[in-house]
Amino acid sequence: METLKDNVMTISSDEFENNIMADAEEFSPAIQQQDSGTHKEWNEVSKLPADYIRREDMEMKDVAMKNVLPFLPGKSLMKFRTVSNEWNHWIACPLLAYQQSTSFQKLSGYFHQIVDVDLQYDPNFLSLDHSANGVPNPSLGFLPEGIKIISSSSGLLLCQGLESYYVCNPLTEDWKRIPPHQYYHGSDPAVILAFDPEGNIESYFHLVAAVPLLDQPVVLFEIYSSESNSWRRSSSECLEFEDATLVGGGLYLKGMAYWSTKSNGVLAFDIKNEVAAVLRVPIPPGRYGALTQVKDELSYVTVYNDCRDVFMLDFYGGMDMSLNRSICVNLGHKKLRQTLDKDSFIDNGSVLCSVLPCINNGDDIVVICTTERIYLYYLSEQKVETIMTPGQFNPKRRFIPYTNSLAAIHELKN
Image 1 (cartoon, rainbow, N blue to C red):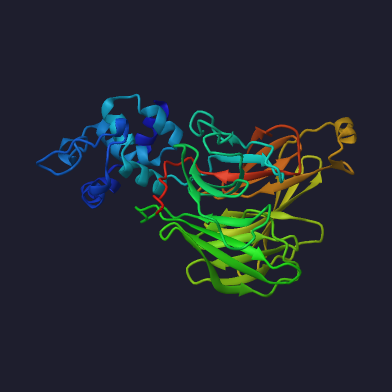
Image 2: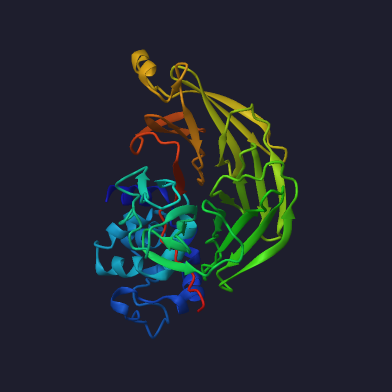
């Protein structure tokens, strides 16, 4: 319970208590008890759930339950269900799931998978904190078929089967099958899951597919809406591509879908206004990077090994994706020279490395992957944290950033 205690001491309840009753009154019709399929008992006087506590009756444990739990990762919440029946009821409540999905937006880890056409390799999960962040079934065996993870957004995953897409929450193991799309998306589709939990009590989400036309420098967009449970083609097209080869997956940030391209550009699509553009990234030939969130904005970050333990990070951003800054980082790789000489993934004594895509809220982390380890570099603190890589280095292994969330999935229409 040390983690919970720390949060109680650092988060003031005054900021949230004034809105507790208003939130409950707004969302109370949707609150149901999930255990055993029965509805929650209601207090006939207050018209609020029986386990909802009025402000004047609150004790410290009640303040923690109502105001601290929404800021914890999902795995921690699942463990806290054993504290008491009262806590179990509250953690199972849809209102808490909504509050937690909007309040907890930190990077929890990466789903990783070797990408192949036949879906022979199950996904796995690399947690940044095993005690707090995790999922019960990292291979997503609860889905009806073998899948490939395509995209992630606010705790939900988009997966591709042999013929269908699935959207699931790997923590709650809730999932929905997406109806068939009209256009051919390919074996490694450039499809992004766009899910904004804030103000979205219905848990609506979109899928945005960037579909390059064969042998033409044109990309069209097909959009799925969970509200209508249907696909449609956008009227917008992108005609600016010299090389329309897109890297599978992508990144969703603040209403925008982004894809990296093999020509060192970024394809951007405004989902609300359906406007597309290509952002050129002026990086040296032969160097590649990843889309990541830095200070709540999109950045394209590259890394290369300068010498021994020293790595260089270059940050590109803004409307012109110009070079904003470069940072020299000593990762303490400490790889012996004789090992460097024998390693087939080392070129001229330099360690092969790459930046992993990352979405984070408040931490400003750059994640660097080498042949041996994964490093978290905290920009504001200039601190390096090291975790081991998940198995032998494989250039076909794809990493999908994930947030440990209780986010619900919108009930699709038949």
